[in-house]
Image (cartoon, rainbow, N blue to C red; front, side, top):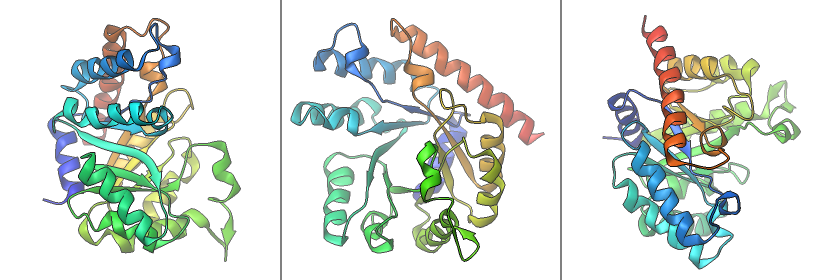
Length: 266
């Protein structure tokens, strides 16, 4: 079974498209020790794994602590224990040999299921990740941050740059393990993304605090293949950070997602 199909079946099995971003800032917790942060992340996973098919781990939140933060990155796959899909949000992308070793680190050493990569250096910087046929590669195409307008929507020969990226992704998807990172804040472009993209999963940040359109993101992404609705601050940002509150917020998003999916199926 290829990665994209395994991802899709995991989402279908849990009747959900929620991707929880484990972007935990320990400075905002009641106890800012890394041991507490580690146990807190474990509790989040335990409390949500029955409903959450995908977790995205932003490596910067952990790498800033050096080897101690890396220890937490090593532990997270143990906590998930293959019950959900793990995305290493590392945004890698470098010359061939460097990407080869980045891929080896994330897939072989750490044991993550998939990774986010930047396409800026071209296809040869991405192929070392794609060559892990059973692993997933989400390529930044049209992101949710305001600065995405600086390059991604620039016209080249009357066509936006992000569409060239999508065309490259279509060609690279020979093992059915390529997906796109498409910001849910790009309402006006989602139909054009669908037209440009072959069937593949979309990882869609920007729901919640960034104001992305949940319903349209789900509808258009599901029409193409699969839409993963990434929510981080919208689930984790509670003043007292109680695990019960995080569980409740994840359930609220899950119910919204299921309601929209039900409408789509009708």
